[in-house]
Image (cartoon, rainbow over all chains, first blue to last red; front, side):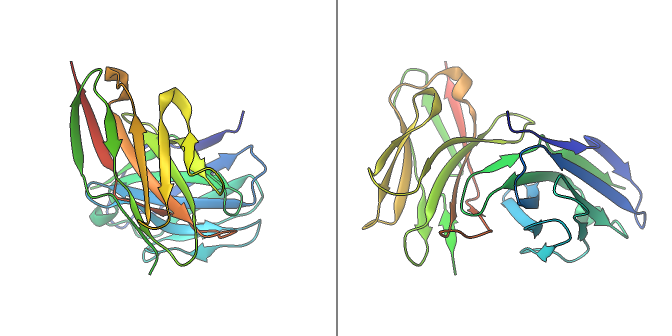
Length: 111
Length: 113
């Protein structure tokens, strides 16, 4: 069965610190995505990738970087975390035009 | 701009009653359409999808949705809800072969006993 895993599941960070969220997929999908979910906003796309070595800006990329070192792995990096980045982050994988498979989410709190 | 609108932030229905969750999309052409469900503190799971053909598509757990091009809608229905259907439901759309999926803001469904 298709699987997307995320680590860590919960993270508390300090303002100004660096945070790396990791995602791994065993679906062999070309595309991977990072979203954040906040009450009243639904899911908002931060970055996405359509293959190893590629990253593209989504709708709200400011303050975030992404890295896709391999087909299976896609990381989201917060170089200087801020309290406004407190949220639940979801990774997903999928092929173009098709449904996406989501990870369980990472709950990030920036103090 | 491409968009998906779910006009109802919260819906409450009694167990055993029928359900309709509304979704409207704004896309050039006919997009691919999806409904996802999110249970408490979990990721999203696909309920059903529409690519083309029969406008009524069947999904898991007795859910179905109907595509309407004239109305730009993709409403989700269930004949008889169960308490375990309480969750947040997201409607989503993507262009044919596109990388990005646009999600609605979600509808929180509460099934009361």
